[in-house]
Image (cartoon, rainbow, N blue to C red; front, side, top):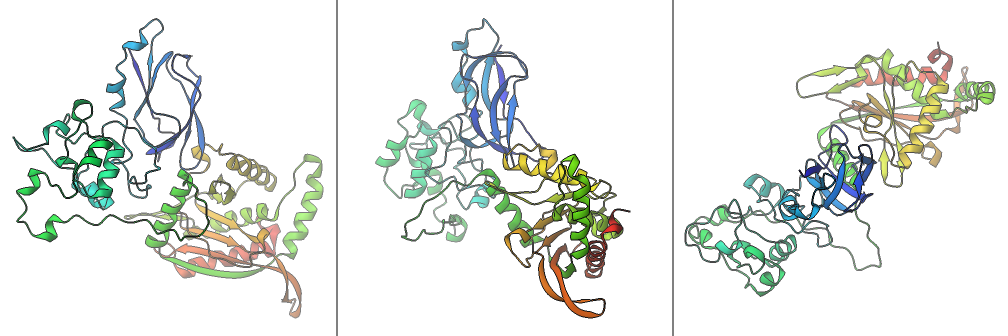
Length: 458
């Protein structure tokens, strides 16, 4: 009996992913635990293991296919000795979602002629989906006797057309319900759209010709920004880049940010770091300034629990430990692996963990639980010479700390003007959950811990 292999949910929030690479081919024999494919989620590329044993009869989704919905059948297995040729591939492919009609908000425009997808049947757009994408909904069930409608209809009275035909029809302003299909089972193909006359309307819409124009006219489709006539190159957006764009836009649009900045003297911290590194050298551990700042933020959050929070529409969640998300730049984009229980971990443990997480983040090898969650974030751009910046909150967290470069500045030392190594730290707070006074208390505590660092080790 054929076994359906479906697109897995590799994280609690995963809704779709990219089938980056097949590691098996049709005819291969699989055992439980064999690696079948590499799947790209919004944050990492992960290996997909086989659960069942059998022979790969059909591969239904080609490698490199984007926006494959969780639960989509991507391959068919049969038991050894079973006739693989008897598997009904077209029936299996009908379950494969079509990028042109199953996109959710924040995904790339399916009208892009370079977008990858299958040439199978497409699910009809509902009125709600049409509103989401600025395109009209697919025509509903046709009335009896409607001209040209029957050949292009399939199961469920929906227009049968290839994704390429749909894109061309949309570009020409054609309604596919008025186009007669010449493909298998009356399916509309590219040639049918090329031969169709623009402006044709289906009979089902003719009955509504007298309706008000405002009610009949669909919302205009969003047009991509025009690219200037300047030499350039383009790169397809990765799933990670799409997610970064969506989440940061949502954060700035929905989270009221308040920014608080303090100048912090680093001399005592740098001295302590040097002493600790000397004692840890035999263990192969070398602390960075950022390792100590992660610890300082975690201890500060426990001292000021009103800032170690998450806002939800009906409740305020206060966390009992400090899990710090550390911003790491990778070739694919920014990711924030988490140092869990940073408030109670030793500095050497934090340093070792941060290095390991950062290395695996750059190789897209993090597990979902290693970058999802966290109670607050820290982003350090001091190594680039950035003096001060304001970071965007990483929802649903309530705050993020932005660290600037340490530099020699005039500073009041023991009541007298002198020169000290000083950095600027800016906290971004969700003002729905954290009042300004509470945010100021956290920044004050952080400053005290950095300037008197033995306090965070006690």
